[in-house]
Image 1 (tube, helix red, strand yellow):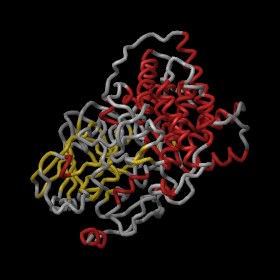
Image 2 (tube, helix red, strand yellow; image 1 turned 90 degrees about the vertical axis):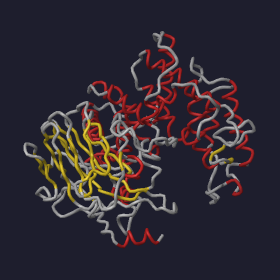
Image 3 (cartoon, one colour; image 1 turned 135 degrees about the horizontal axis):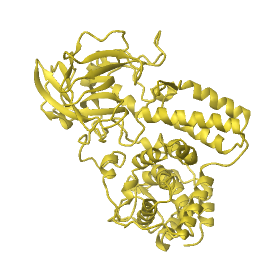
Image 4 (cartoon, helix red, strand yellow; image 1 turned 180 degrees about the vertical axis):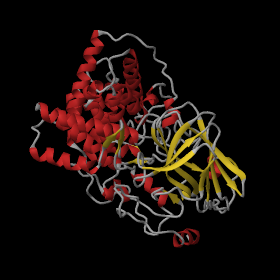
Amino acid sequence: MMQFSKWKMGAAALVCMWLPGSVHAQIVKNERLLSFEEKLVPAFVTTAAGSQLGISDEHYRDGDHSLSWTFEPGAALSIKKDLKFEKKDPTGKDTYLSAFIVWVYNEQAQDKQIQFEFLKDSKVCTSFPFGINFTGWRGAWVCYERDMQGTPEEGMNEIRIVAPDVKGKLFFDHLITGSKVDARQQTADLQVPFVNKGTTNHWLVIYEHSLWKPDIPLTDVTEAQKQDIRVMEKRFRDMLYTPSALSDKEMQSIRKKYDFYQITYKNGKVAGRPIYFVRHSEAYERMVPDWDKDMFSKLGVEISDYFNLMKRIATAYNNTQDAVLRRELKQKFIAMYDNATDQGIAYGSCWGNIHHYGYSMRGLFVAYFLMKDVLREAGKLEEAVRTLNWYAITNEVYPEPAVNGIDIDTFNTKLQGRVASILIMEDTPEKLQYLRSFSRWLNKGCLPAPGLAGSFKSDGACFHHCNNYPAYAVGGLDGATNMIYLLSGTEFRLSRQAHETVKKVLLAMRFYCNLKQWPLSMSGRHPNGGGSLIPIQYATMAIAGTP
């Protein structure tokens, strides 16, 4: 606590305001954070002769400017300043680690790497590679003492970025030289696959599971299977929204919210107000004295707001036959899609820190699925499928699970996105392979789980955090019951035992809730007396048929 307080006392203040003359918010001002909002390149930032530096307003991730670097093969960009690296607590009481945080923009993907080096008095102490085979923004949170090569030293005073053996141009923004962060949450992706290696946290294994391969062979899709797919797609659409008339009030609300994001195209390039994942605020936790973990939500720039608007646009598009309105809604949707993709919501990108992202991404999967035809018409469907597959960690369904059960968070936050990432595909052998794998994986997940593992038990309990936990069960049962109904009556339906297991959990919950509320003794860390079962889950299971 003393170390933490000392750090806070020496930190600069949180801004959380619109800066004079700036279009977009620079969330924090701090000596550790380089946002490049000045008109000139800082004197401590230099590059080799033949390469060029500039302040650009073409792309931005914090505020409305970034540092542009046009480089020659093998050139280096140097940032000379105190990096504020701090060693980990030798007592082990403080588990936070000092991390380097940066966002990089690439206009032209190249199958190459740049090298970040960290120096003390011109001596390289530690380094890491960063892949540049992408377009748009990519973020990285890399812990000095765990993820980098070499040994970091307090007093490091230079960052050197070394170019590959080709010419190119990159942009850098929101660069934090050193910030103590929760060491559990940094996330590997295609750019930095070595970060937080060995983590088994189900939120953070996107990259690792993207490498998994199927064991079910590819086969042609039969007409009967296509009919099953049409049935499932119709049921899924009916789950996602209820058709109703599009009101003028809803259109005006959509327009106002859309305008807030200030999405524009210039010379074929998209730009808009930067959007953030709620957990990105953790970068500032020990940098500012009045840190607020919900700062992005309060400013309206958290990605859940963004994707919920995309969902509203998709729903409105499907709720009107007015050609003029449909054209406007289509334009707004594609602009938001382009902007999100450009800001790093794309295949291969994990934004540095992605833990618990499922809660913020629900609208993404719904919106993209509902606009499948629009995305196809715009030539973006294949890219969108890859994006959904990545964030839904859909390849996790490929291998047959070794044990029964699935974590309740997966039932709650990933199932809808995972089935959306499959059903949005065209009717290819790969889609059929995914459906068969998904059905097998879900079936094993609904079978009675061993010991204290999640989720469903043979006696009707539903486990999370190693005990029967109805507060989590209701969210997980939404996913489980919907998927049982979705697959029912098709080739991909669940087994009798899996169906019976979920049914028994629902009936057991109905017994101990009597009528709807569960007792405080079963409320865990939610002892507010407000928890209750969800009747629609019983209706869903009823129309799904008997085991």
